Image (cartoon, rainbow, N blue to C red; front, side, top):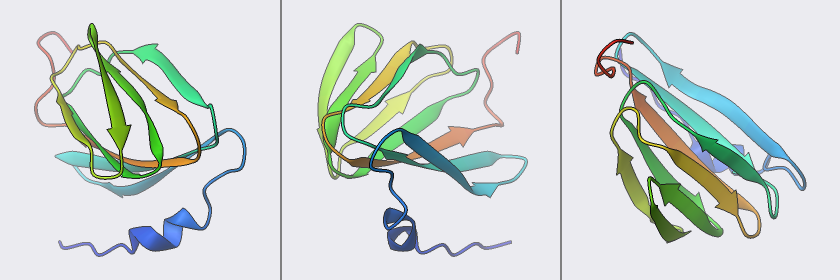
Length: 109
């Protein structure tokens, strides 16, 4: 199955405040989630049981990956292995695409 999604259409629904997420695609192998962050919004530190990739599509913020903080802007792409602590903080409005690789879970999950 092939999927086609106009991600630009999602940008119109980015929140002025808070965080909005929408699943763009999900199957047995991968889940893709669009995130819209209002200014100064954040996802606090957490881990995922599977490898993931974050791709900032618009805006600016910081991505914490383990002990590393990355200043992110449109075009920033970050890979995270399963189990790695990470967090996201938007400076202004920010749009991010998260891809979770469901078939590659951490041992014991």
